[in-house]
Image (tube, rainbow, N blue to C red; front, side, top):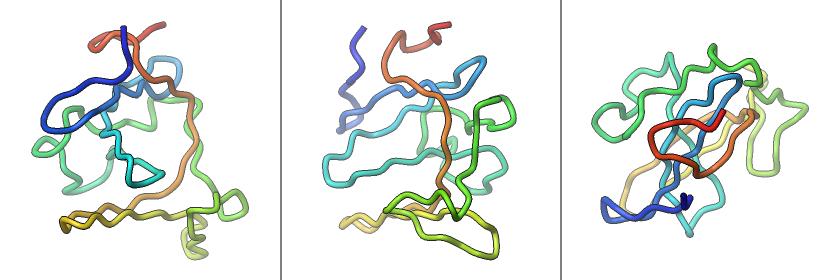
Length: 118
């Protein structure tokens, strides 16, 4: 049971996120940036199913999901005072990009590809 997989022209990791039942979110391992993101429920036109392996993460199914408020922003995030959220973005040289807000939740990498460790 390794955590790092190779395929689709890149390396990726299965992140299992949330409590009590973790949801799989497959993310690319990008050595050129220090952050990653995946689409959450309620997001319109966020890449699923065309560009993401897994369905949107449903934050309402995780009792440990916690949006970072402006007083808890990391160094990489910018406070949006109107929404009291910590916002982050990433732009890539080939032209793609994403925008997100910062959250905290329980997660682990690896395990079985199709079944969460409980």
